[in-house]
Image (cartoon, rainbow over all chains, first blue to last red; front, side, top):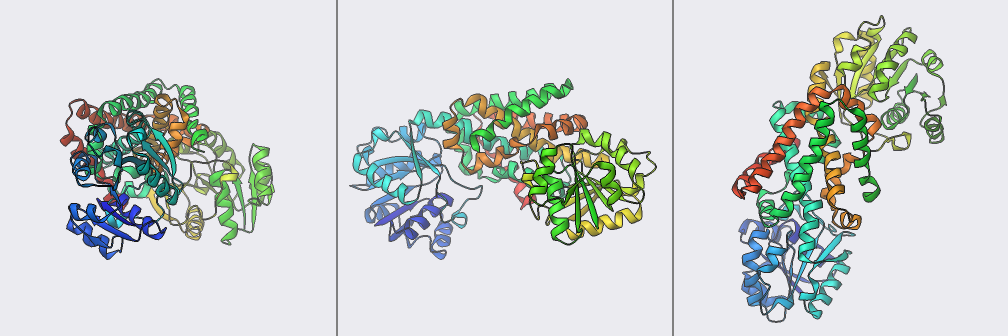
Length: 279
Length: 279
């Protein structure tokens, strides 16, 4: 089988590596507006050849679209215009806006909307990793809008990647993704800004950045080009959970101001509850 | 050499393992108010025997004190009362209050104040790990108040653990620890509270908790008993940086409310700066 990867970055590149190594595809075609990304991907043997979008679609059975979500809303209708019987997998991190761009498309049934809950703070084809998806959750969105054949081959592919499928509507996805994933990114970006603002002596940051700080601030290395359009498309849900985050920091602040350390201990105990859920 | 570990938890236990395995000590004595911790530490061969504080001090050349900082302020004067020519290493995460408790002690010169920038979100002797300190920074605090002999053996020990020593005053330590380490903990505790408050469906948290969320919220598993007294002793510095953290989240909020996504992209680019410092 031939698979086209449109947007050969961290996710697209990692999909390409696994599809080939796990025997799901024998030929990977890369499509990217960046010639540099395509060169890197060919040099690292992540893709077998680079083609234009129409050529890639014509030559593939599955087209995986993994661009930032602001590009997806323009690109997905074009990809669906080009397909005959191919399956299109889109992997955006926000769904309501992305999927509304192709809601009435005549080929809507050939598209399956996925959000693999895997990634790192790095981007570009050089960040692609084998087995990135192994044992991770993959959210399938609005499955009733996809055709049976498209869903079947998608499920076979996810099974091959050892992903665990769960089903959400687009609205559910965007709400819960804001509550868990999107707010983590804003929290981490803000922590980085805080430390950079207060700690003007970079050597001190380096000295004192134990594993704890590095872990909490890790997502602050994430790409602005990828995350800005996610916050734009999921603005209302993000604002809602962001207000709660400011509120929870303000609780610590109020207790500190009142020197109510019993209250702080109680608050920490409450937050420790996350241990039970995450293990 | 005999080493006594007072407070056989994550840090004390990890020190014990390395001191023995790297050949710095041949006998490790554990002191802990929890008989359960001592039993676990003996069963895991982290310590060779459990003694009372006076017995342990009398029998050791180095006494490592690794209790929570609220215990340190009462315990350190007692330990210094007991020493003759031994060296005492205290490893509290806040320093000004802790060190003021022994500032005028007749044996002050035998104490060296350290903060090894290493740890995990777990606690207790079962969390102890070999080589936890390898290649990590160790802050030496107010070194001019320690005697030459005490400092010399401390430096040899840190070298044996492969730690990188840096020197701070107690005031500098508390300020910069608040700016980098303490705020990361509050940020993570608050993120956990936020997600637990907004996301009432635990299965959704589990589904959507990719590596990103888990990493950002990891410190929220940290011990309330350890962290509450750190925030108490370093209250003013923590409040100062906490205000800035609330301010940085509020910047995101204002830009989201105004739908100023160029501004958000700029803010993310600023926070990406942390990449350059942390690598």
